[in-house]
Image 1 (cartoon, rainbow, N blue to C red):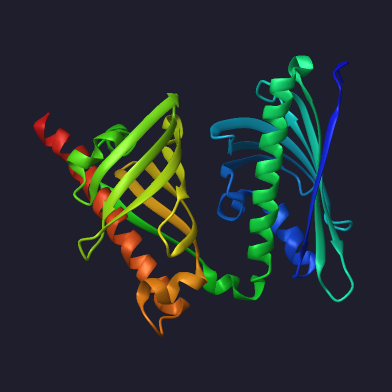
Image 2: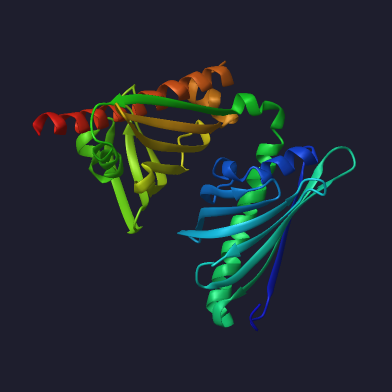
Length: 318
């Protein structure tokens, strides 16, 4: 620990759900982008059942930040401690604890503690970090409460699926097509417009207008994290269509001896209260799941087919 002043914060929320459900959501860190609005992507690098090392990406005060984190899980006490490794400036050190307590009657209390130091302890930097922690902690706890309190409907509300296409062409060209998302308005018919920024290599922030099957257009905002050496692009929609509370996904390009498998994976949390508003009176979650599956699958499969054509056409030209 340096000689800097240690700042401490505490945020708490009561949740009308069992403590085990709440702890399970906190411990399953790879699902955080689905449940926590600020979190974009989490890669679990190591995990032995107690200790884990993570690479995390999240939005902080409108910026995309990334860091390594070490966590220690204690499911018996329902406590998880964490420590950022090599945090980004102006954070010098960042530690914290998740605590889940069982309340009388079966409800829970979730507490999130932080202690941190700031480089130079300058007032403007301290304010920046304090605002990021407060904004993100409130968003995380509020949304986790909302999700946890619907735990009996998880199987209906959460939808995951994958579409796959085989390509007889170079994996590099398939990945190139998926990476060059800024060109999609000219290449992908259902994309009508797209604004893209990439201030850090491989971290893309975009706003996209997509045409739906009925001819209307909806706007989404997303953050994409690109892993070119692994043939992966993961993303999270930070502004979703009305029917979805959250939407994460991944494009993956996997070469083998006979060609390339390219896939599009989606995970969605449905917004139950919007189902009838979007799909009409009497519509239920079953219909919403089918509608989202068909809509997302149609667009992603069309994009996969275009990536396939791009790669295979280049081979024919050569």
